[in-house]
Length: 427
Image (cartoon, rainbow, N blue to C red; front, side, top):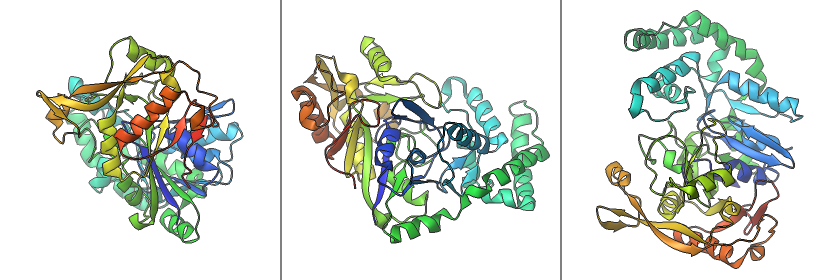
């Protein structure tokens, strides 16, 4: 049963779309298992660049069935817009499957998200304002709207009215906002029903049957390990579980069916939004990484915070995900530095710490302990094998592999689909 999980091993934006797309031609299903349109993947195919927000990257691979699992939250308007945009560019989207148990991002979820973040002021978390968190909150509070509810107007009406009974009290009395009319929300949601109907399916059954038939299924996480609601830098995290365990709960496929867990690592580190970031750079090196790496959020459009590679985080990701392999991306961005710092440990209150502290306070005060590695100046974008890389680039990869605790099986040396060195096959 060749089931693989592919996820971010840092704070997201590691290049998961490129990695998923690379495997897309060899797998039968690519499944998003958590998050919503707060995640973004950029995939370059030939001279074409595709920015995907909600759809699995496998939608660009002919013969591959893309699936949105039950753990994803779906904004119907965003999904339909994304499908339309791909159709206009000649991409076949007809194979898409959406779990009937996935939750819907309603207009009031978006409103609550935006007004709450503004209300927090300097204490804001840095959400995308797309209603993701409030939708997951509704799910846990058991007042959420699921895709299948669009096909029973009576149930949909009861659920929307029940949710707004509370939310309108909060909007009007706490935030001094207008109440939201239930009938308008219901009308809008019902308007999506027939447009989505061709895609809605029992994805739990389909995926398990596919694995029983020895089909290859790739589970694609959004965001990254350090943004996991349980295992990330709380409270500066997302509202779901991008870690490997989320692949099981977000799809209905049991853990014994997972055969490989691949972590995507950027050759340096970035994050978007607020929260601690020990290796963050505020100098010309940080600006250079941002400029050369094109570090701007696919979904948010925000500049990413940039810093040197953090091996402490990589080791943590290996541990909590049970990683079997790494895919190292954007190695080419580091070309030109004479010396490249790598964070090998932290200093906290004068003590050296080599593992991620569990205390939020300790992590907030962590200072990076760097080891300097020799850089390279040669263009590596045309490298087709590991031996094609300059010696210092090879040594950099080997050092990261040793520090991170899992083998690096592929290396990205450019943004293109073919600009990848495959050391060990993932399949």
